[in-house]
Image (cartoon, rainbow, N blue to C red; front, side, top):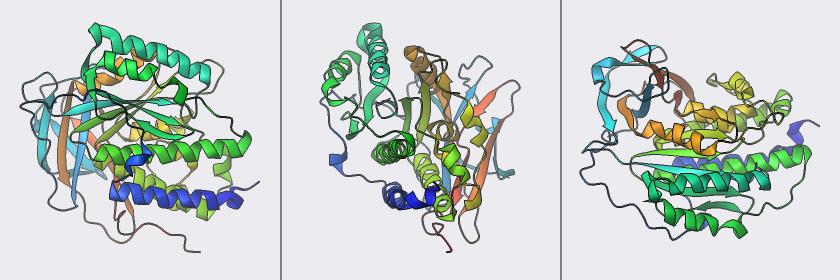
Amino acid sequence: MPLRDHFSRFAAIAAFFCGILILASAPAECAAQAGVPAAPAQSGAAAPPAPATDDRRVTIDIAVTDKSGHPIGGLGAGDFTVLDNDQPQKLLAFQAVDAQGPSAAPVHAVIVVDSINSGVTVVAREREQLGEFLKENGGELAYPTAFAFITDGGLKVQQGSSRDGNAIFAHLTGTDSELRIIGRSQGFYGAADRLERSLGQLSQLAALEAKQPGRKLVLFISPGWPMLSMAAIEADLKQRTWTFNSIVQLTNGLRQARVTLYTLDPFNLGRHNPFFYQSYLKGVTKISQAEYPDLSLQVLSEHTGGQVIVNGNDIKGEIDTALRDATTYYSLSFAAATGGEGVQYHALRVKVDKPGLTVRTTAGYYLNAATQPQTDPH
């Protein structure tokens, strides 16, 4: 059955996305608050690049690694070239961040447990390995950390962040009764329901994080939500318009909140192909190109400069790999291009004047997104 018959349920989500991500606000009641001690304020914290005096400044965070994935420090502004649609840009601000230095910029991690798209036994196994991570080094975490849960009952977010892994673990074990997965329909309706819930709660989380200073590493322990790739083939103009507008709002909203996403996939052989998403990594420039898989967790992760990490059942190892990006990174700002009419996609590339290094950053941004959302011409 073509998806056009089911578009009305998705159209409501589109409005929800636009409202949350443009306004960067969410009702407090959308999150269940947990009493975990908050991390103390970081003394001597250097400010991130100065906030824009107008809406044309684009700020991005950049990870630079060697061939083994280890962060590379010691680079200066002159080592970076930013290309906006292949055009070099003048840097307006630059900051090299060393998390262990005396003037480290604020950064915190949010670990998200996905009980919408994971089975009960998988979530239980994940909790065991999360306990190992939290209790390592006597429970002293390297970075302020919070937990969030996307569930059938809504988003649940820990209040504040903490470096006390033991306190977080105590709270984590106390939430078991709240996270039982309720039964859900199967087939297309079940997949569409999980997609709706997952994207809605991601947008809520992004809005909450937009209120916090500094950079945020958001680690989803998840196989990702349904991509609906077969349904995308039959998508009509209305569905592609909704998908395009959702891509625009999430792309800009996550960047403006300084959120970098990571997919930590508890992959089991025979379950699915964890690399199918790679066919959808090209930036979406117009409505006719927009497909549901472009909104997959894996694509969004790579497009924010994060990673898709597939290490089987080694959740702790995946967390450790993702958190490397917090140790040393770079932030820079440049002026966005002046656009014409309509929403316009600008692809970003950052080059480093050193051989053998890998650079990860925001894949792109959209101009005119807040004032000129695309509409269905019919």
